Each structure stands twice: as C-alpha cells, then as structure tokens.
Image 1: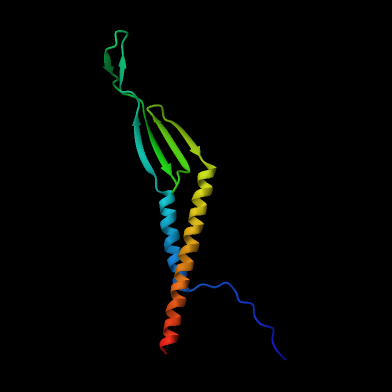
Image 2: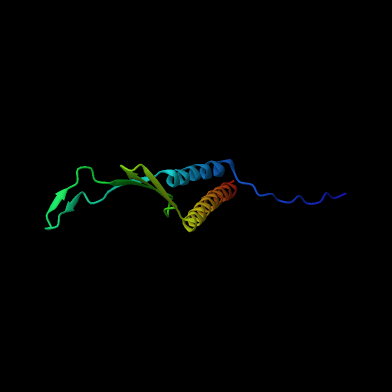
Length: 126
C-alpha cells in the first residue's frame, strides 16, 4: 500500500539560523543603544537695559534617543530640577519592527539561496 506523501515542512539550515541570530543581535543592539545629548538652556540673561549677564547654574537636560532606523523613544532628564519626561512614537516602533522583520527574512533567503547554489554546483561537478 502506498504511503501518503509527506508534507514538506519549513526548514532552514543551521548555518542560516546562526547568521540570522547574529543579524538579529546586531539589530537589537542598534535599537537599544541610546544616543545621548546634553542641551543647555540659555546660560545668560538680560537686564532692562539689554546687557547680558551669565547665569551661575543654567538649567539643562539630557536627552536619550532609542530606536533604529527611526527614533521610537525619547527620554528627557531635566537638571537641576530632577524631572523626567518621555515621548513614545508608535508609528516609529511599527517601522522599526517592519525593517527588523524584512532584514531577517532577506538575510535568511540570501543564506538559503547561497547554500542551494553551492549544493547544485557540487552535484553538477560530481
């Protein structure tokens, strides 16, 4: 009696999985490392006659931006007030996720295609 044909499952090579894991690690690193900037407010003030005078301890803030390729999260820390604020952009998270998924899929397809081409070349030589 004939056995029913087995359905072909989705499989990738181990080397493809390793390359995809390295690519995912690089993309995660790019998304979680922050770019920090310090923004100083005016460090001087004017009197009624228009003369500028320095402020001894001007207010400033530290801004950290997270996300790649778009900034998805901005954390601001205001000094010397010790006040914190954040801005979260859902659209940027969606674009970042889409870029992440496309990059991993393309990486996997390129690796599998390369393996198949090399395998075909070896079969042709033999």
